[in-house]
Image 1 (cartoon, helix red, strand yellow):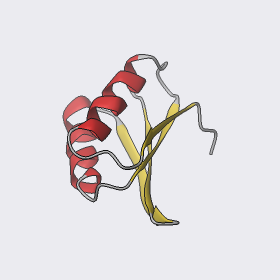
Image 2: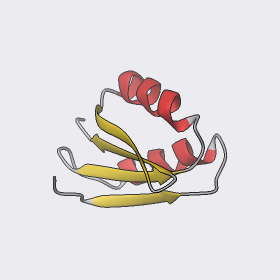
Image 3: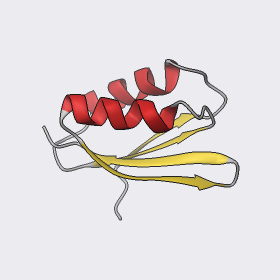
Image 4: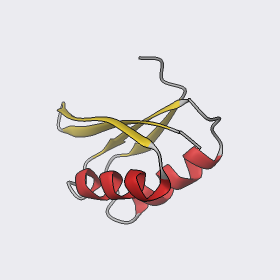
Length: 76
């Protein structure tokens, strides 16, 4: 998977991981992939809801090295 942009939200609590994601997606082109690293468990539910609401593709959510790693694709 080709990662085009990353967001480091490690140590941040809700709503900061989603706010940082919104800003990053605004700077991306359609079809690009964003990787988000976070530690707030709320990102798992919040990012799915946000992707559904905004029309982006949630590729995956992984627990890795005490972090939550999310990949999403900008679709519009």
